[in-house]
Image (cartoon, rainbow, N blue to C red; front, side, top):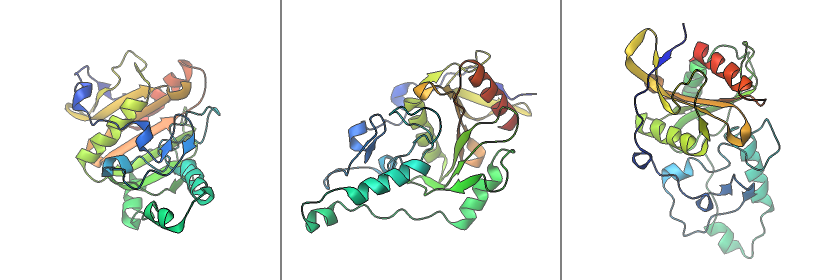
Length: 247
C-alpha cells in the first residue's frame, strides 16, 4: 500500500531558508551563464552548497533552464568555463581562485548507496563532489523498475538543519505542482507502517516542464530528486507511482 500523506500545513515561505539571488552564485542556472564571483562577495556555506552548477539537468530538453542533474554535468561545464576564463593579471586570479571541493569519505558514499531505492543496477550511480551541508552525493542514470526515473540525484545531508535547507532550495526553485491524487505539494508524507510520524517532505514539480519528484527522508538525512522527461500529467503520475513504491 503506498505511503499516506496528510494535509498538514508547511511553514510559510518566510520561515524557510531564504534563497540568494541568482547573481550571487558562481553560475546562473536560469541563463546558462557561468562566471567568477568577486573576491569580496560574502557567501554563506549554504550558498556555496548550491554553487558549481548544482541542480544542473543532464537529461531532458535543451532549454537554458537546467535544474536537476545536480552537480554531474554542471560541474564539468563550470570547470571548463573556469579554465577558459580570461584574467588580466595573476594577482586577481589568485584572489578569485575557488578552493577544490573535497571528495566524500568512502564510508559516506557507502552509506548513501545503502539508502538508494531499488532498481539501480551496479554502475548506474556515480559519486559527485558534495557541497557544504552534504556528506555525500550520487548522480544516477535510469532506474530499471517500472516507471523508474530517467535520472536522479541523491544527497546525504550532514544533519537535519542542512537537510531542511537543501529541500527549501528545491521547493523554491522547483515549480511545485499538486502531486497526483490531489496530494499536497510541498507537504509532509508518512509511511503506512507509522502514520503517527512524519517521514519527510514531498514535492512534485515541473521545472522546465519536466515531471519531477523530490523528497526527504528525515531519519536517514536523505534528499532525492528524480525526473523523467515526457508529457504531463501522465509522466508525472508514473513517476509518482514509482516514488510511492520506493520511498
